[in-house]
Each structure stands twice: as structure tokens, then as C-alpha cells.
Length: 149
Image (cartoon, rainbow, N blue to C red):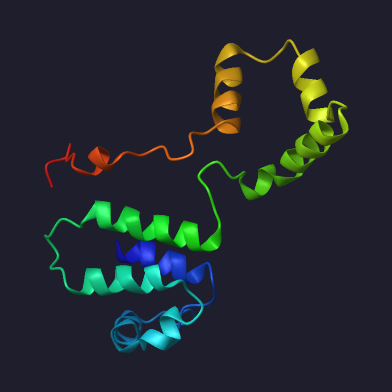
């Protein structure tokens, strides 16, 4: 879980121990990292996740439902939805929106209509990616513990 926190922090900037290679120095830098240095550019939910993790011992099962809710709050505050296109899909998404507005088919939609080489399995994956559910998770999903942790 700490790796998730560090990855989320690193998406917003450098970690304070980014240039350290010595294990002891690295561990000490992580232990002494000031919250303002570590979470300065992050949403409050990442800081809240770190606070939650600091209260836990190694063997405790994280409250995945609460973590999920933290991420939902961050998404809501940022105006994001599960159905938003990924970064690499933005160009195609904008072309489809523009084509729909103008009434002319986009290059991407023309290509998919005329192509006969696409196997059914790939078509299924494409359609699933284009139309994800608005919220693919239910509250009950977080009560499950299939690994028994």
C-alpha cells in the first residue's frame, strides 16, 4: 500500500529520496520525510491514505472500501469519471465528439466500420473500453475477501 502512496506522490513531483541509493539513507529519508515535503502537490486523499497506513501494523488488512471512497472523493473534486477516456485515447475521443457534432463520421469510426480483419475478441475489448460503466464497483465488492487476508 505504501508503494501506491509513493507512486501517487511521484505522479505529482519528485520524492525527497529520489536520488538516494544507499539503503540506510533511503530508509532514514523515508522515516524523516515531512508531510508537507511529501504531499505538497497531492490531493488531501493521498495524505489521508498515508495517515491510515501509519496507524496500521504490517499484518492488518487495509480498509479497501475507505480507500475506494477516498479515491472517489478525489475523482469528484477533480471532475473525473470512470468513463473518461485515458490520456492516449483523447485524440480519438475528441475526433469522435467533433464528428458527432458535425454529423460526419470520424476517421476512427470509418476505419472500424470498413475493417474486416478485427477478430471478435478484439471488437469486444474495444467496445468495453469505449463504454465503461460510470461506476464499475459496488459497495459489496469491498466486503469480499477472496484471499482470506
